[in-house]
Amino acid sequence: MSEPRFGKAPSLDDLAALAEAAYAGLPEGFRKMVGDVIFRVDDFPPDEVLDELGIEDSFGLTGLYQGVDLSRRSVFDPSPQPSMIFLYRRPILDEWAENGEVTLEELVAHVLVHEIGHHFGLSDADIDTIEAAAESA
Image (tube, rainbow, N blue to C red; front, side, top):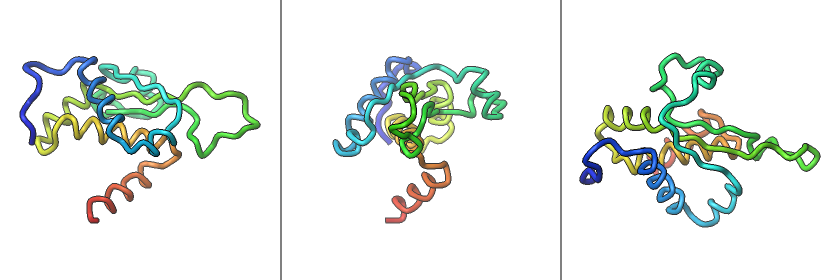
């Protein structure tokens, strides 16, 4: 585990910088396939999002992909709204504090890549299968 980089809880800007570094560390070809996606860090998901997803605890959601995933886009559809990936600072920090086995950088990268998976049209089950295969390799 790396040495703590923060004397206090990382700010929204700190987490955004970690997300930017994680994204920059992904292979160039992968980043090109992602295309135009807006990344945003907020403290918590809005109540409407939690209600829509049936999540009661505001700490229960660390990230969210919002948009039409690449597998469902068509040249015949009107221009979709921009795709967005949200990272939620407080739930991420809570999970990081509870886990203790991963660095904050690793957790932010994990959540970011998970949400990019949704952008590609992968389900949670698909992503879990890929992660399990990568861990056993």
